[in-house]
Image 1 (cartoon, helix red, strand yellow):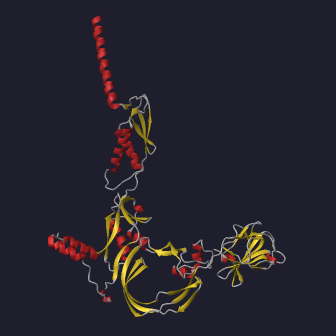
Image 2: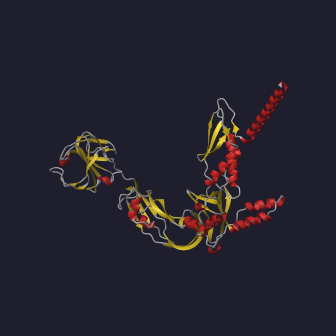
Length: 529
């Protein structure tokens, strides 16, 4: 019986070993993978796509491999660029035990999410950038038609072609337009086809011939080739290939209208000699009121403007400007340049017309430069005078007239020039100068250089100083506390002549200041620089 029990126990052990081995094989084949414990580092990673858990991985590399596979599966079956909103995150932790998913399982879960977040298929397009403006077209043919339409607006006979070339200054593929005449392009092609290398005596003769200057002769009007000579874009244009959804692509007709139609564009105008606000407004089809509103430096329609001042105006301009030159024949009446006779004893403000002008007449061939429809320059190539213009002759002074400055630093303007209510008994109801409130003892300076004609008490003026200036004007300073100059003394502009005070008919410490022209008081504020 003992032998029988031993055999039975051995069979049980063999069966147990076989069963254990079978379980282990099943575990390997059908149970999830397990992570390997790693001391001091993350060994278990939760993978999310758009905040949805798509699986767990034993390393970040497995997660990225699953994502790449999902992206490839997502793009299968289309030649266009198809996109999906996707944001993958990987959160790591260190665990002793954890089941991980295979890359295939994770990629399948990722693919489902990519499909749910699929964006509209993107189309191949071309983005045109004009300065800071951009517009997108569906094909390179549309790009060419848009550029041609801008050129053909001024090239009625379609003598010029637009070509696209790679910009050599850019690292990425950026196309820029190049405009050439069809005649020039044809000539270059013919030369390229027929050109043979020259050598020896033949090459020497050709080189010397090319160096020789052409014979000069007096061209007749009929010898000039009139019309469009050259044309090019006036703005920087760049074209790049892109992929865009349908809603961001503009149809050709809309793009042509957007780019070539004139729009009111703010620009700067430099005031020229003889300009007034009315003529400037008329030149740019504005009202004077609109011109004043556009410029903070203009108070009203009576604001004085000077040569060289800059004003904001609106000019009708297309988004894509075109520069071109036209050789033109025309006849016109013209004015001769004004001739000046200098008088060294007059101020520059003094002039006298010695001879009135008379217009002449001439025939002209000229190169006229344009930007869009505006003439930007004229170069006369041939001129034939029918009858000569008589110039205007003007005598003018050369002495720069004196300038006038505010006679004190600071101070508060308390009374202007002109009619007013009497501030105190004995004061005039017509103020002949301006008053600045200032503490007693404030330094008073000569407004301009000149000669002191009075320095003392002046009844209602209190202590006062009068100065005569080289242009015939006179300045007066009243209600002083102390006088620092004498009659007959010459003073420079800005020289200290007195201290302010409160003498004479006065309501408080201040300086009274006058400027007289031909013996009559005028508003001093209009004379100060």
